[in-house]
Image (cartoon, rainbow, N blue to C red; front, side):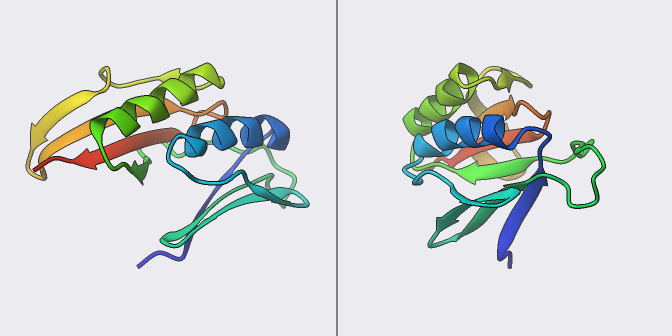
Length: 125
């Protein structure tokens, strides 16, 4: 359904450092820099961070969350630890199992340095 996700940043180098570490925990190679944007290319899609082209400050989506698939709870924990160590802020509850309408999930939440809400998700059997 999706070809890519792009979010904004007010500091491209800080965002690259954060996401290189965060997504590196999921086995994603460092970003490719293209002027005012960075791209993380994977077989399942593209994640990109960009300075706004309209010259206005980047802002985060209230109510928006970007989820990253993880292979295990341990990978989700590594993702969360890498994000916090790279300037992210933990949010929601601590990483752990949540039960709900979507089944048993292992979730970890962060806000990136620009305030975007991120989630690591592992669907448990």
